[in-house]
Length: 317
Length: 277
Ligand SMILES: Cc1ncc(C[n+]2csc(CCOP(=O)(O)OP(=O)(O)O)c2C)c(N)n1
Image 1 (cartoon, rainbow over the protein chains, first blue to last red):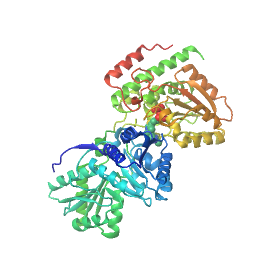
Image 2 (cartoon, rainbow over the protein chains, first blue to last red):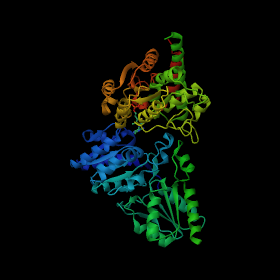
Image 3 (cartoon, rainbow over the protein chains, first blue to last red):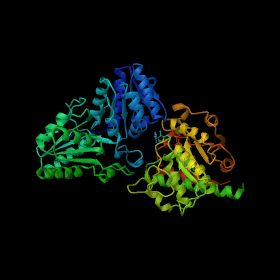
Image 4 (tube, protein in one colour):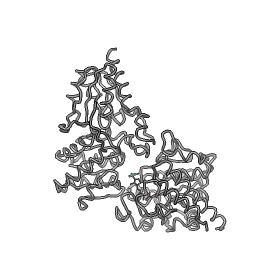
């Protein structure tokens, strides 16, 4: 699979998308909690200083303020690291954003183990789970820069609370040029027939590599980019299960409650099929270089390949 | 205070700064500015005030120290190593896979770290809990915590401030590393927290305002804190972020950047030449 290897961090794409959005709409406001250089909201702050609010190291206050700005008719984007946005401020998001169903967009960066050296305290592996469980919340994990840009445009158009998860490091652009992101719609890269890999975020690129590895072993693996975790594209999951008979999920997140959890729920209710979940296994992160950590936590293409072979084996039992 | 003791402490702080910089240069990632601003504070605590036993970190009689601004892990690790908790050789493993020296202090791995920190604003609540436990036991152990000035923006700090005053935790003493900078810029510009001393006073604390790089003032303030009855103590330490070398002092970009080879060499030269009065 030779894709053009343009690489951009999804957080950078977020910053650029915000600037474009700010130009188009003057109701867009942005909040940050002393991490604007890292989340890339600094790009918006530079372009539109009057519509940028640095709330300081006060994530709970930031979410409440964002709720108030939404009541006041603004379109607030609130950003910090994923662990603080969804952890520290979880109840503010639940009570002041989702319960009243306000139009607040939480876009959190530095999710997953690829945060790297900062270590386990900063590596959010639970954010998708704890956002997904809140009623009214939409949850999106873009796979690359262009998809992030489109996702930010889409959540701006959509009315209601949204959580968008972006990453720290550069990731290859993998979505086809004519691809159009739609909330709740999975993108099928390859249908496959022996097993289907449903991946999200930076793991979609790994899934595509795994597909090539599996091909060499005579296994035809499908690959689906499930960038919206909630609402989940149930039809895509069911079709994949019926077509391939076995599913692998791949995410840079705990296998509990995130993509793997959501797909397990969909499968067991609608189309039971063997499932192998690739993700962190009920454990915290640790310090290290991002690539080393992906291997350490068994989140590489090779690990997806092994998972796929296991899923195929389960099918034959 | 005996001048010889002060001189020894100052020299210890100087050597700790040298090891912090070497470690951070080696790791290539980590928090330089907020480690250097807190070095004199940490030296005064571990080499003058704390009752602790590096060979027996769980000793019942120990005072408790909590680094609430956990990103300053490099100064904590270097201080612990100098105090004898582990060999200074281990400092070069900072932030590597499998190291006990995590990017932020991790009490699961490293003896001497009382509690994992890194998410700002949480350490003072834990310190209050430890202090309450000692009160229940009528034990003489004291509890110390180091906080950042930016960290004071977290609401939980002020919830804990009330707890400490309400329960008259005079066995609790915090030191605020008031270096005036956070990540996105000067604290005053991002989200003002001054007047810091007045805030703690209004919350019912005993407050001292000192130069956080003056060893004599640090030592005297820590001594005085022990004499305060029925109130917790806040020592607001005026500091310079990146203190120790012109390369880093007052430079916000050195919050989370590490010294290059040239910067390290310049800084080591300055620190080698620094005469400890
Ligand atoms: C809850 C939380 N929010 C954000 C961060 C990211 N962060 C790490 S250090 C820092 C700035 C801290 O400023 P200050 O307390 O003044 O520390 P110092 O300047 O002494 O390093 C921020 C925002 C964090 N670690 N925890």
